[in-house]
Image: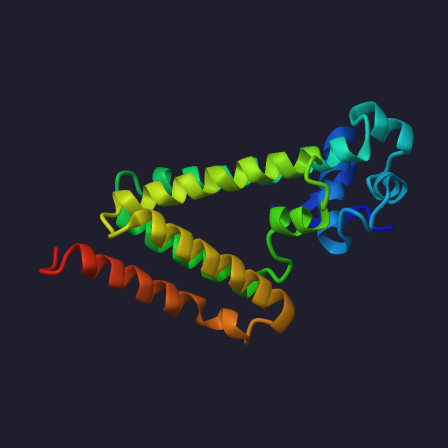
Length: 207
């Protein structure tokens, strides 16, 4: 197997990473490609240039590894939210515009779908520890987005945030099943129309 794994953050030289990091990077990539139930610890250990003994030394079970992968995904996505404020401090309107552009770029460039959502679909057990981590992470996303729409001065920010987020999640599924030229190609235009309508509703006489 290749000793280089293509991950969201770019090409990662596995051999240069510590064993725990190699395992997590590899597991996330394999889970994205084959699903959490389609990949065993043997394949993860081999691709991570290690062995099962080392894997189990860092993670007590495959479930523990799945939890760690999901927590990494959540942490990275929350850092993404933080970057909006860092790059455009106090400017919620611009932050929302950048959010929309980044989401659209994601639809164009990444056909794999949401790492957390695809994992949650596979984990049918309600009491699986990773499901609780995913649910908590998604709630954090929702809270951050509602706050952004509220700070942007848009009408019914909670409803708008939920509608835009559902639109994006649906577009990602469409991207997976129908390709970049399917309905997901209309995501940005539809989202912009929703934002404009919410702005006019809250500011009928203009800003």
